[in-house]
Length: 307
Image 1 (tube, rainbow, N blue to C red):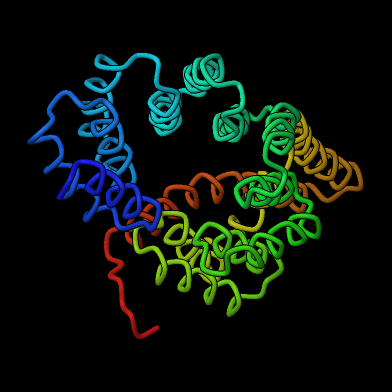
Image 2 (cartoon, rainbow, N blue to C red):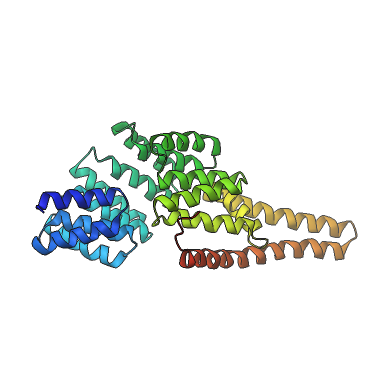
């Protein structure tokens, strides 16, 4: 097989989510052309999808040494920084890609992810709008708008965009995950589970779908369920609003305890005060319980075609 045929096959495998097949082809390419920057970069992209972070970093480093002006490589670098929870560095890599290719709309979309990670949602929206100006009909742009509105708590607007994304590609794992998250937010457990499993059926590597399944189980769990609902609501707020809500809740219980005590019921005042303490302890205990349940779901899940 020619070099061009192998690279085309690797791109097709990558675009179809067949990462193992793409990796095998790229190993053959690099065995014959060890200094091919694009092959190293595409291998890094596939390794990244497999969450083989260190291997992806190694291949990307080689690719950037061979070709330091390839926008695709800087986009990969930005994705790695986002996984490392380094959004500022991710933004710098995206800007580097855009300085080379100003119409690289994927870089704008990734900037929106970085800004979301930094909880700068107005800048995230501006980045999505910049991508939409370049490619208004792109399914990734439509889905990015859907995720943005879901993150800010506008479920109805998020549904408008995710339905449009599903019309463009009904088998999209990311679109089905978002549809499942919307269903879960509305308490539609069966619909949420259907979309999560459908996403995994089309992309067994979808970590978002597995996390969604973990969230579904958490919501149904008698101990974690209340915490999950509270956390889901708080996550749609800005940092300032979250802080104000928590301070307001503390002041409410303190005021209520003081009022009960002033009315001549000191024991009842203690009970009110202990309710707040109990709530604080509960949230402290529920968070690690949720992470343990999620980790268990990610580790023990096995793909089953007979959903």
